[in-house]
Image (cartoon, rainbow, N blue to C red; front, side, top):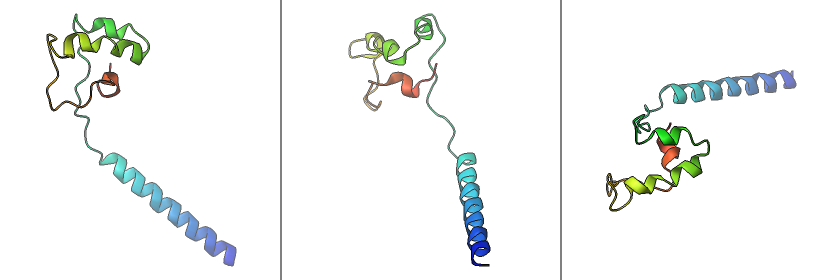
Amino acid sequence: MEKKGRAAALNILFIAGAAALLFLLTHAPKETTAHLPKDEIHLKFYGIARKKEAERFCNECHGDGGSAPLSPSHPPPYRCLFCHKR
């Protein structure tokens, strides 16, 4: 009987953990980061397979002195395509 009681407790613990994980996943905040625009300027990034290779060009427009510099409150700009999905 000892083994059955332990197995039942482990099953209950597993089910409770799975339910908690499911609850957290269904109540996660919505994605707020803007996707990479599909405009003429950004279309070249969709053709570059490797993210790191594509990110080399972000600073041309979004760096200091570029046509669309990042705001001071923007996170560090070294992993653009980590947040901004293609």
